[in-house]
Length: 80
Image (tube, rainbow, N blue to C red; front, side, top):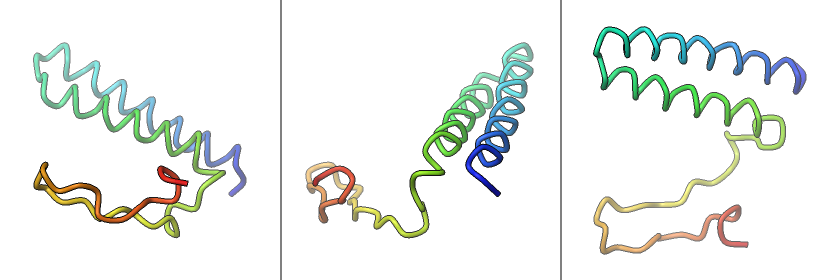
């Protein structure tokens, strides 16, 4: 699958999520509407940046749930 095909795949998925969000919004299901919007944004980001990054090989930073604990490792994309 080439970059354009990947983009179209994620775009189609994101459009479906937006339609689901609109449907939930008309039914006053606010939580699910917001969740579907977040999902659509995530899928659009994957479609836009996916061809440039291999998400399976980028090391993720170790993050503590304790807000007083700083980022444990330096992420190469965030901290050059």
